Length: 181
Length: 148
Image 1 (cartoon, chains in turn red, purple):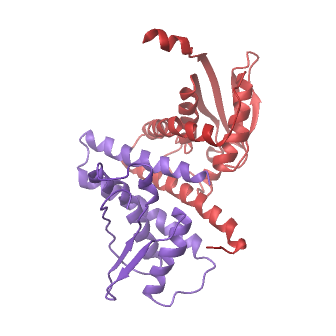
Image 2 (cartoon, rainbow over the protein chains, first blue to last red):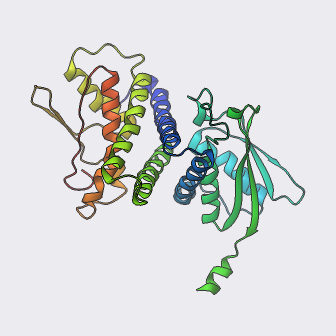
Image 3 (tube, each protein chain N blue to C red):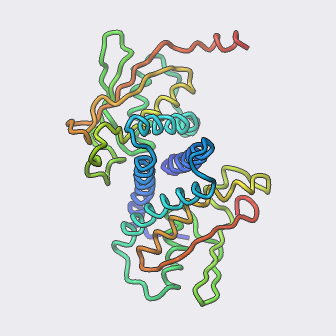
């Protein structure tokens, strides 16, 4: 079953379109169901959390990343390996504070908003890509790292770039879990 | 392609999310399937537009169905439809023996009654695609034994 080679890039694009369009339909449906933006944002975050907890296993199985020794290594891996693998983009990582537990991922190109022109009227505080925050949070929690992930800047709201902030909270100690049992 | 895992997970979360909000008493069960199908409809419309941008005009209904079975299904689910039957009077039966969205879930008859939730989106997808190609249709799905 051979496929002509020149159709390959089209297939990949369509696959990504499927995900992007599905996400768009989901957000549209949520906007219809919930009136308040905070509810929609919270719902997207919860969904993303569920996805992230499962996605991290898929990610670890596909990429053979070694054990990380610092938060900045983790932020780099999320940006350069995970984002590249699943969304095809590589955000840049900056460190925000001296204690090195706050990082920002700066996305200059966001595939999820490819078909979005602007946020609907009356929905100005909607975080369209809140699913991404939930995914990162869920994935980190599955590897025993508590983190706070939010959007610092959003192109859809008029900022120049989209910026996701990851703040690593206290590390959940594995030994703690064993003691509780 | 890694994208597939993302879409599978998103789809599963959508289904469970819709049903969870139904459990809280807001909508009855039938509405959930309709919601999922409508989402699939919107996506199907958009997807078929992007997909058929450069393809030739379709000669007739059968041609469109063959396109759906081969190219469309291959792009979305990485495989072709295994069997297409028709009565030449407007009814087409597409059979997929290893449906991608169900393979990861179970193989057998255990969770059969829950399977229809996961098919609603795909039914909407096909209905949306056909509607943008000019065909009004009703799409239903049946699972005899997971994942077929």
